[in-house]
Image (cartoon, rainbow, N blue to C red; front, top):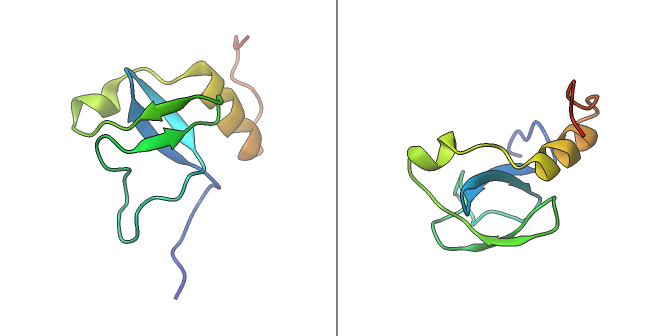
Length: 80
């Protein structure tokens, strides 16, 4: 049985922003564990963070633009 995956990327809080990544998450995990190195859609290598507050960080503009393109969505209004 395959897992449902709505988009070909995952969101990951890291270094004060919410980034998107196509890196595989550890088997059986729905998140990237705290401290794991992740390559992002904005082409950075960051260390994942966990916790409720981390999910409230602002979204990385570069990852947001790349994620929207991969999901087939238009750029956000006012995006640069």
